[in-house]
Length: 256
Length: 186
Image 1: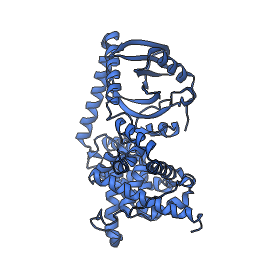
Image 2: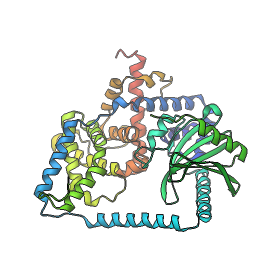
Image 3: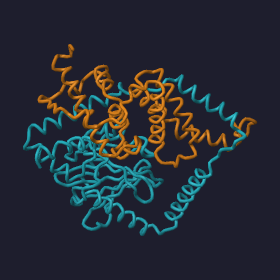
Image 4: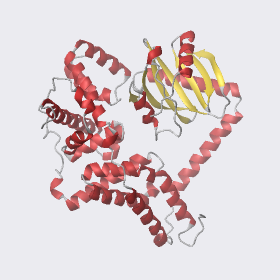
């Protein structure tokens, strides 16, 4: 990679829009090219400056009140119209029906095979993410960036921890779709290995970390805690992956 | 608080309730975008209010996807209509994306201070950007939308999103670098 090629990629990297292969090549280039490395640092410096909370304008309370009042008064005048939109209604009905069906399926299917399918799905997602096009939606080694990123994208708040001190640095996160729902995937690194940690809410009781049967050479460890279920997937060997899981369990949760 | 009051049909009330639950929580984002685009509180409130009322009117076309992106699309359209009516000279028309061709500003020192740049300085620098660039910065850095989402939201090709963002950043770096090289005295 030369500087001309690297130039535009720096922004993509900073924006979390660069795939894993690109990141690797770019990082290599930074190593050899102080000018591009400087440009990368400045891109991050600028991003930091632009991310200040103080730059965000919050809606005045008065505006909120006016809008609410206006909407309610419209309701009175438009009540005869009945502009209920059937498209929306049918979309809502469909999604409720789908949710019911999914629930029914989860409940009806025998547990082992459902679990197997889920594990297969997780491993596939892990592999897809490594195939260089969709590892990270938010690239950041800063848990205070990763955690808020999930806000508004998920109906739950995944516990985000950084385990850099234990040599499992957090490198980012992404949204994923597993078992018919949106889940959080946190991505950690250990030497050259990537660990995907999938998290979503559950009604299951708390359970200790347990290894599942490896699939396609990937180890999977599963546990539940405080109404969240966790699946860690990696090509790391089982012992090291278990170490990661233990470190994660004892690590401190980040509250932005 | 029953839905069956004499004002408004039950369906309408439900619709409003749903709107209040799904769309209005993004009022801060709507106001923030309007505030950055319009440049002052008074106009921003007008734009945000009109956008919310329009959003309610068109709530039927909302397909339950990303409510924040959906509302911001309406804020943006409302703003540009407002701009045409109120400040026509500000519209550069079809913004020629080559017009502001980057005179290659290479910033050849690390702008570490940038990290701690005070909000006022950064705000001024963003405010100086042409509106089409400013909105890219707001959507990307403050709202965290992806290139694809920004392209859909602002109805421009994704390549344009990337080049405007790149240009906006170059300009910001340049103006903020100037700021700091003169020790912030400028």
